[in-house]
Length: 42
Image (cartoon, rainbow, N blue to C red):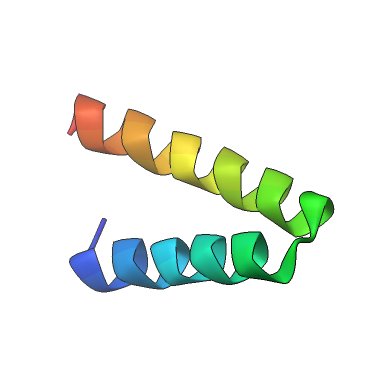
């Protein structure tokens, strides 16, 4: 996974949290968990 992808997903997470959308934030958190599992395995 590229750093660019990681940064874009983190930006999306920040946007979701700042917008106050629980649906978006929940989806972003799941994305982040997927990223962490990939990073840990890799």
